[in-house]
Image (tube, rainbow, N blue to C red):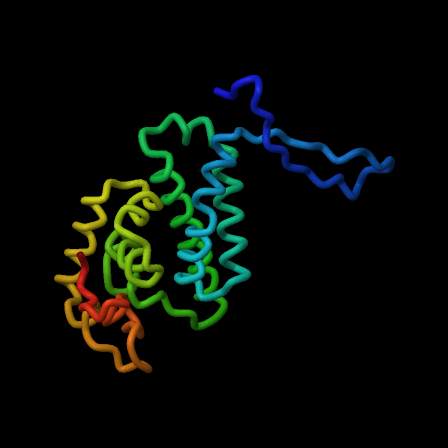
Length: 194
């Protein structure tokens, strides 16, 4: 519930091109909780989407659509037990739809992680290994508990031990396999999951 002293966040609707008489732009008041949620998650959503889509412009449009759709169902989202999980499922559905459309137009294959692993495991690998989020950050973005992320990572490592932890054939330290984690972290340790 918004306190009286808090000013609502405003967004604008562009005027209709069909209007005979130009009118002032309509301004919408967005709930502060929704705005805070967007500010907290939008950068990580965009980085994750870019990693999956491999197209910055399409990724931005997908994240904008996800956050826009989220606004339309915000009361249900915020009253759920895990709002971030609802948003993550919505984002995943839009990414999957966009990828199906891309593959229909061109030969864009599914990213290697999602081609090989179940979705939750692939998401955990991308967030932890490719985007280098902490386990807590990955759990927050996905809307799950940290042990769920750790479990998904362990299952992914068992399914693909060589691909996730093998030495890269790429150009030096910090390079990663096409599937997942860097082979060496900044401290020179192994790329296996904590």
